[in-house]
Amino acid sequence: MPFTIATWNINSVRLREALVLKLLAEESPDILCLQECKSPVELIPTDGFKALGYGHMIASGQKGYNGVAIISRLPITEVAQHDFVNLGHARHVSGRLENGVTIENFYVPAGGDEPDRDKNIKFGQKLDYLTEMRDYFHANRPQKSILVGDLNIAPREDDVWSHKQLLKIVSHTPIEVDHLAAAQEAGDWVDVTRADIPDGPLYSWWSYRSAEWDTADKGRRLDHVWATSDIASAGHSSRVLRDVRGWEKPSDHAPVFATFDL
Figure 1 (cartoon, rainbow, N blue to C red):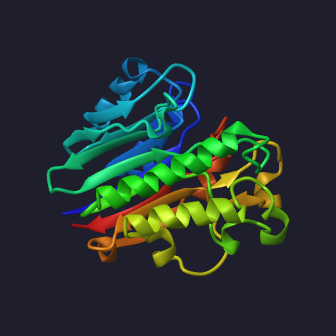
Figure 2 (figure 1 turned 120 degrees about the vertical axis):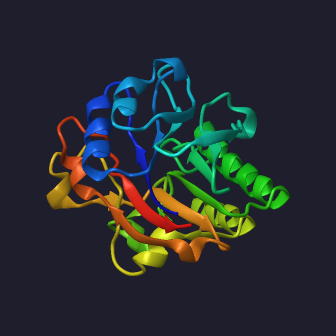
């Protein structure tokens, strides 16, 4: 059964409900994973989703911050919500489709501005979050699973507009990249996006601070689609919907898509 999955940091699902509906209507993914919903679960506007055929949702939410949701045309059963590092943040939810595939939706902490855990508690929390992800995958080796989300790290040199200039900028520092790689290795995860698009610059986030974001193109690939190695070869048709970043009152992230023949 082929299905298409998309991941998108929406930066407030209630504020940008119309954009979510536009994406669902125009692109028709079978599953849409959202991050930074900034809403209690009961206030996520599901009526419009249901009207478009997305009758299933699992989510972890909180007022004003964080929040993750999986909106689906396909039946999905909640598996877990993990509070890594005991931050009290709604940053993870996972569910299982009827074909046995598990979907893991993550929103990794951004980490603040200073890449020094002694000076910046948020950076330390980010590193600890990734370490607990690593340990969790070691202890609970995932199989037949897809992991998506805003992981807030651009790991490769061509995942950022300037490797040299961003080496000391949070989201591309070597220590973050190493921590992400350790979590990826622990779960035997394959970067499906880069397996499909192996070469060249590829971004999913452009700062609000740049009014000319498109022409300046100072982006980073912070949003990811991974799959465990047992099903990774079934993934294809990866793409970043860059144009969505230019919609009216957009999120600063663009959706990332992949299709799986499973």
